[in-house]
Image (cartoon, rainbow, N blue to C red; front, side, top):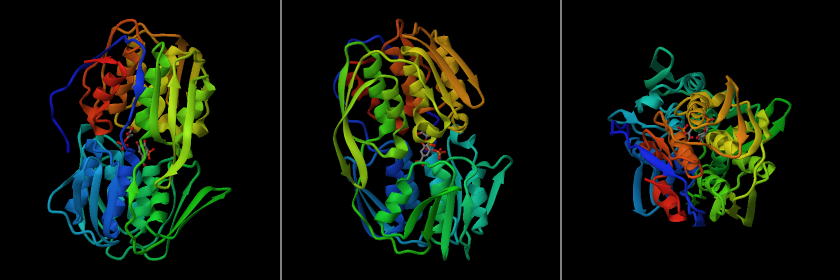
Length: 443
Ligand SMILES: O=C(O)C1=C[C@@H](OP(=O)(O)O)[C@@H](O)[C@H](O)C1
Ligand SMILES: C=C(OP(=O)(O)O)C(=O)O
């Protein structure tokens, strides 16, 4: 839902050693997909560990609006009774996806090849984000899109009555575009093919295979070629959602920069398409151990043990960007506490997230005493082993910007304030109690 709630300022102060266990919430990407595929399966899908953040709750509400039964049975435990591929009903009202790019883009894909019409909207942040990257390929299936100038929300899609399968090369590395096309391809006859030059998170492919779709990925000279056979009957599967590596990044970063810290973060997904931050941190010399590596719910997971220690600057190559796309804000904070220069390359996509994350981080970090340079596609931080702090940072309705600056405040000389911590509830509703439980001073 789009909120017009009062801003919720929050302040983080220099803290003593962080210790204990950080049970971060379920993976946001997998949670959205579990609800959507559950709604497209025939029968009952049981989900455990679902992230109950606002982004995912908005997707749950949308699935109800399209005719699925979606019930909360207990904490993180949900039941979805699906309507089958092509079985979505026309929703009565506007579909409000709040702050969630993943929610709106995947749902637009899922309905675009069914002969129904739906209007989508979101909050001020989401209404500023580009949607043409998804509606353009959906038009190739035969869907009709009515959008205002610049292809932004609110927009209306009339789904194709007689969809054609599509072969589509994604113009930017984006799992949301890939997933929207694959979900649309579910109700098109024949083979839908997506080609991506850089691999992106593969949760949609894994889950589609788990629900019985015929889908294969081949690596060719063009990149990754993903081929889906249309019109499968999706069979419900139990989905155990692993803990979110993008949320884990915040307590992990806090433990790395607050002297004397040692924390444990259990059951975090180590899917290689999401692992770039952890690869980078090891290169920076971070003391992180991966214990009990195992498979849970079709995803590799591990328990992380993280200790404070010295860090050095590194260069993050552009080909790693997709595997850590949501982690650059917090990496830019960690880089301030390292010695030496960290260069983040190939990060232009950060400019079209919930906010322009390059601009938001650079402005707030510089106000707190950092030395940062940016270009359209790079961000460079000259690490000085710490931050002075003392400034208030604008979060621009962006949960990751809010959490990044609060983590920075835990190790800065002076407190760091964010103008609005409200959006944290979109992805990490228990961020404050979890961080306080480790010893963080945030109020
Ligand atoms: O598919 C997904 O679940 C996501 C894909 C990424 O977006 P893009 O596909 O726009 O890169 C990421 O930033 C977002 O938080 C979640
Ligand atoms: C970019 C993000 O999410 P979305 O695109 O789903 O809004 C994020 O969670 O960092």
